[in-house]
Image (cartoon, rainbow, N blue to C red):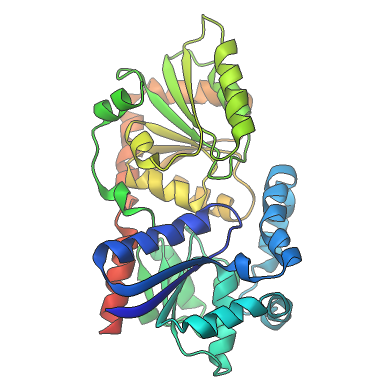
Length: 376
């Protein structure tokens, strides 16, 4: 059993936080540690730095996604620019360093590269003695995740494991665990019962559209495109914490013509995503690492729409290669494309079967179990 476990995330998008929450929940469920502390690293940085990492990230996602893709590719140079980036980050994370010294974790589990970078530097200098595990929260790996003072990496796919090994990470320090999601996703739940619980028609094909925990993305345009479908269907529109978006979705629902064959069910922030997914047949949206992993765990086919250049493009490539997704780059034909999928039940079933094949609903629990074995 671990004495003190520190789980470190960064609130730049919701995925890193959700991965950290999943690992924390797995530690608590298994009783693998006496004390577990989960921290958003940005709480221990300067205000300017905090805004750069969180608010600026969401602004770029919404208004300049091409810039995000350019930055992603520009910075994806293994083992380059480490010192320059570290110098900037160290200036803004002194309170974080003090927190690490005060808590003295036996193991630190990082679901974002920022805390991993600082801890690696402190270990290299002999300032901090802790074992560090890095959990990569996308299907692919970016150079920003590469550090030399890491005892173990947890990755989503075997290809990512091979990639890290080619970059010089020792193979025995890499585990293909999947991206950690809430262990509740491993619990089977009946589709018909879940539809009844949330007031959904048990007979209609059900499409879950997610704007993520922060409610970003073109969810209104997606739903408007779906309204042109010829097949009857229902949409669960997850709006996250974006109350304005939820209100607009409710207005859109009321304005739907009576002739429309689409039913819309707007949902705000929810902790029952596993049940909404259990009620669904497809997940539609951008292929972020956490939402993708949750959908795969529930055996849902994915419909990818305009992935952001960078990590979402790479996630998309993997999902398409595995036969778990289709992609739509042109919103006006989204409804038509899903109609064609619903017209071919065997094709839809194949997407769902491939999703189940590569899904890893126990990823968070497997990570904790592996860390326990490494401790022994």
